[in-house]
Length: 174
Image 1 (cartoon, helix red, strand yellow):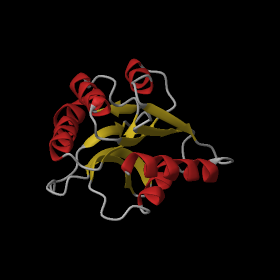
Image 2 (cartoon, one colour):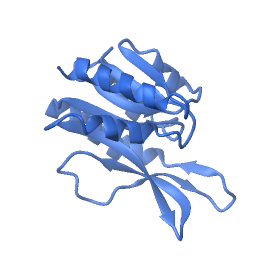
Image 3 (tube, rainbow, N blue to C red):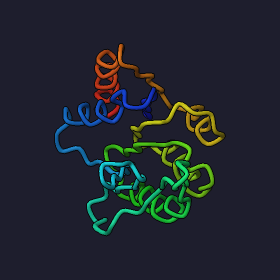
C-alpha cells in the first residue's frame, strides 16, 4: 500500500504521529498541505489550508470558519482554487511524498479538489494523510481507492500504530 491515512477520534495524536514519523526521514521532498487551527483570543474560530510548497509565501486562506451560532461553515472556494493548485504543483514537482493533513467534511462541495485528491492517490507518488472518521461520498472514495491503507488510531494503540506507520513509510519511501 503506497497511500497511508490515519484516522481516529479528535485530539488523539494523528497529526503528531505523522510529524514524528516524518522526522525519521532526512532530506525528504515533501509537498501537499496541512489544515491548521486559527484561534482568536484563545477560542477556535476556523481552519486554514497551509501549503508545504516552499514557493507559497502568501497568507493561507480559511477552509472553514465557525459562525456565531457555533456551526461550522465550509469555504469550498479555498479548496477549489488554493487546494487544487497545491496538489497540481505537488504532482508536477514529483516529490518523495504528498501530505494531506487532513481530509474531512469541509471539502464536501469542492468537486475539483476531490478529483485532484483522487488523481494524487492514483499517481505513483505516495500519499500520507489524515482522514476524518466520517461517512461522506468523498471520504468513502478516498478510503476505497486502490493502494490506500487506513490506520485507525486511538489513545490506547497510538504508540503501536506510530511504529506501524514508520514501518510502512520505510517500505514506501525505499
